[in-house]
Length: 90
Image (cartoon, rainbow, N blue to C red; front, side, top):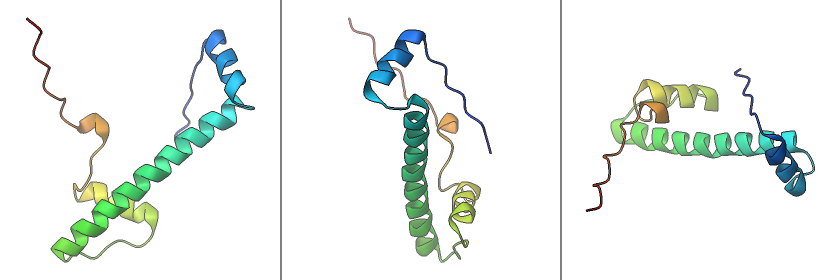
């Protein structure tokens, strides 16, 4: 399991303390909730792909996320092509 570290300046930390009782808990919750949303999106895409192509779906959420990546149903955002550059203003 990866261990993710976030560094804040003293000012950023003070600012977060203004809106959150625990900055660490807020950060943990934000990351875990975004991961949950992504997992639901991935599994939905996998189910649609497997149903459309008559492929057996893996059992369990961990296996389904892995299967979605293995079948190239989804890819890491870091592997996605960069959008074309916007034309420069004249």
